[in-house]
Length: 103
Image (cartoon, rainbow, N blue to C red; front, side, top):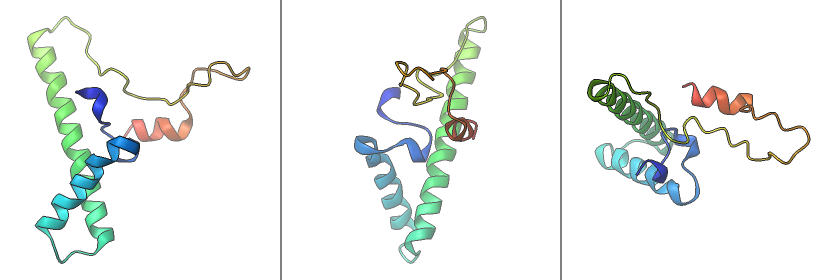
């Protein structure tokens, strides 16, 4: 289910942290001699690489099956800009979130 995880490592917090935990465990199992920072970096790279491949493949399949359709992912990019009652609300994604969504 798309809503159960996020393709960006940093956005998988709270109950979604299980994906980061399992990614670290997989890398640690493959490389038991690696120090924690190296495991963390490799786990993040592998997770985000796999997420990107999955997303791209899903879009390609959708476009092949329905070439006239408009394709995207629900709630992605996520802007975390829910403060719509604020008088200064613009609806824009904060710059730091935009930068992460663009990766």
